Image (cartoon, rainbow, N blue to C red; front, side, top):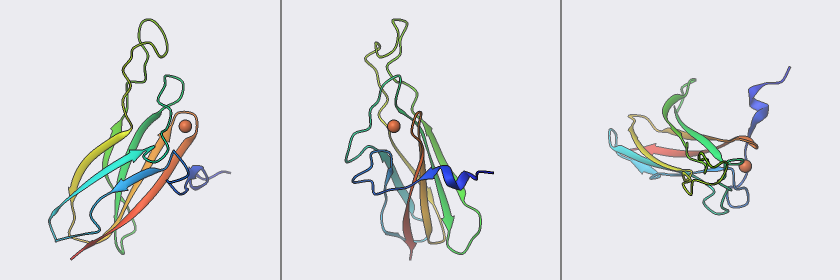
Length: 131
Ligand code: FE
């Protein structure tokens, strides 16, 4: 039986357009708001069409030493060019980039998962230190 671990792909974002790029400070003070932005296709643009697009990203945080990740945010990218005229006719396309924020009292790992409607699930992570 297959496991979900097998469908979560990872790679270097500089050479693979599906990998979510996480941008956040490397270290923050306890209780300080941590601004996080996640972009898919930062170095190499991902297509954004009715047939092929990034549908959503979810952001998680795993406090150091803990077992379960917390779900910080989920963003749906919902405009992919479709209109009453058919696919790729609306001229409006959501860009696969999102910005949010959270607070934590512990250091840990920010994890992002993105979903391409035809290339599946991709992940990346970034460590942050709480001083
Ligand atoms: Fe794709």
